[in-house]
Image 1 (cartoon, rainbow, N blue to C red):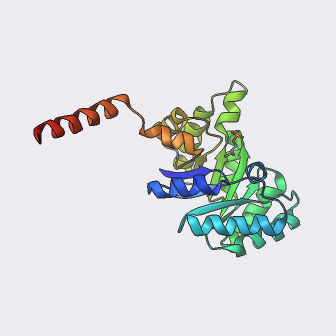
Image 2: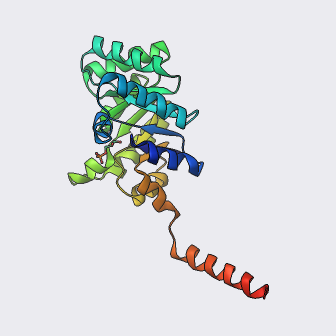
Image 3: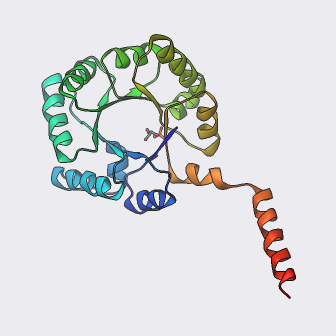
Length: 219
Ligand code: G3P
């Protein structure tokens, strides 16, 4: 399972990268705005900086246009920024056409804003590298997000699709564990949810005792 961090915050990306288990970063226009990154040049430079921090990782950069021609032009510009860039495209008709086009050009894509198995099927048929079901937002409307991940994993396996299931809109640590149980290829999560995986009181107690016993044995 690949671990991506879902943020545009450079300090958090550096902290996750330092853990040694990070495989990439996902961003979106809302996350960029949250960090106060404004203006095309600054946004493009921010993507490059992220690529330099997470060497070798896949970095999703989202298009903000919604028509085929504009998405293709914007996606090509993003892809040309750095070899690690994955062009993130919304699940709309022109988006699927653009994903097909990028696939033919050998440009990696991430189909975003996916909420159903039918949408996941379309993204895979277009050849998306990643597809991003938003599990937290499904949970928000009383629909089980993790069940969608399980259905997508089974469907892609059944048909032999190469598209990777990238569980997104993860809100907490248990979402990561539930996605691991059903075989998600990738999770993208806030740093807090990733750090939550470390926590167990028995680890803390056990370590405390080991260190205390060692100290006693030395006196
Ligand atoms: O990965 C998608 C994510 O950024 C959306 O998360 O919490 O706004 O639903 P959220």
